[in-house]
Image 1 (cartoon, helix red, strand yellow):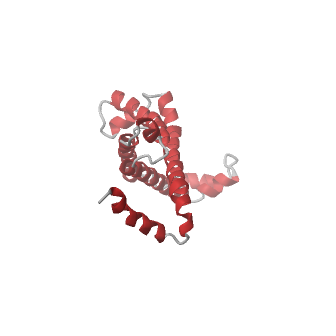
Image 2 (image 1 turned 135 degrees about the vertical axis):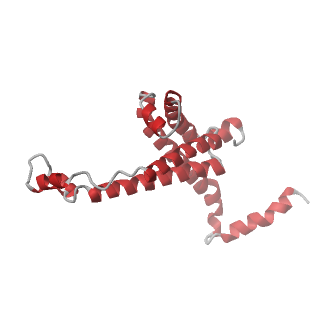
Image 3 (image 1 turned 90 degrees about the horizontal axis):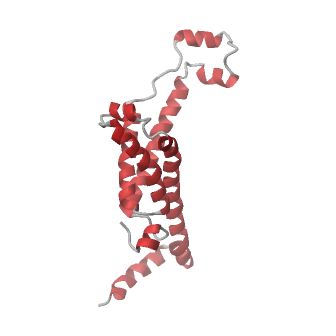
Length: 196
């Protein structure tokens, strides 16, 4: 029994599972690799964008990482900056994707935990601040008055939810590539000829 005879029924079953079987080649050769690559580039690109300020000031997060319990901060702060920026680049091009995505996934999971453990709070303004706002202060725009009318509670709630959901999305995306690799259109496949 050859490999071809073992896999032909499985391939035939997959092609017959499509509603429009004549599109099987398009899905398998273009649509799926394109979507996998586009999402990988998005994950890596966003990590790079978020990593730019950290790379520009690699020691800026020393206090933050030490407050999270990662000592020494002088080591972790630039390491996280490099992981986010250069790791994002490597994910985007699909180079050493699995280990780099795993490392970024762990970093992003800690970020997700941070957003749950240290929420933004319940309001921006005290009762006195709300009274000053209601008095029609010239310091506030109409949009500011609208957002701060309840002390900023609704605004902070929306911001907190977005931070949690964004962290969940990017963490899941990084772990997805850690589990399944870069895909067919990647530097791993083109240069190294294998996936890590």
